Image (tube, protein in one colour):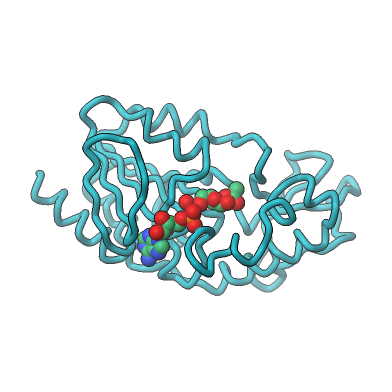
Length: 230
Ligand code: OAD
C-alpha cells in the first residue's frame, strides 16, 4: 500500500465555516498575533487570550467536517494515510481519519501552566476556561496550543514520517509558518507533491502538481488523479 502524507492548514476547514488566518477577513486581520498567540501576550492579558480560544473552541465544536476531510479519511481504503495538520480543530478525526498529528496543538484540550503533562479535554457542554480555572496542582489552565515562540513538539516525528511518503498532499495552507512549511523539504527525491488551494501559494518546491480548487472539490480531483495513476 502506498503511503500518502497529508499536510493540512486552515483552508482545509474553511468550508466547515472556520476562519483562516491570512485570507482577507482572516483571524490575523482581526486580532494581533502578539496579543493572542504568544506566551508574552498570555502573560500580559491572560483573559483576552482565553476569550480568543474560548470563541474558537465553540466555533470548532459547532462545525462539521466537510467533504475534503471526509475524502481524506476515505483515502484510507486504498492508501496508508498520515495526516499532519496545523489545524487545532478535530475535524479530520471526526471525518474518520485514524492517523492525525496536530502540529500546533488541539483546541479541545487545555493544560496546566505549571506542569505541561497535565492535559484535560473539554467538551461541547463546557467549552470554556477562564482566569481562576486551575489544574489539580492549583495552577492556571491555558489552551493546549503551540504559540509563536514556543517549540513544536511533534515536528521531529513529522520530519521522520514525511521522509517515508510515496505521495505528499498539501491542502489549504499558505506555507507561511515554519517549521511546518519546511516539511516539504523532507520528501524523498521524485515523490509527487499535490497542492490543493483555490489561491496561489508561493513555494520553491519544484514539480508541484497544483489543484487550484477548494478542499472539497480539490480532494475529489486528487482522488480521481490518483486512481488514474494506479
Ligand atoms: P493561512 O490562513 O495562512 O492560509 C490558509 C490557506 O488556505 C491559504 O493559502 C488560502 O488560499 C487557503 N484556502 C482558503 N480557502 C480554502 C478552501 N476552501 N480550501 C482550501 N484552501 C483554502 O493558514 P495556515 O497556513 O494554516 O498557527 O496557517 C499556519 C499557521 O498560522 C496556523 O496553524 C496558525 C497561524 O498563525 C498558530 O496559531 C501557531
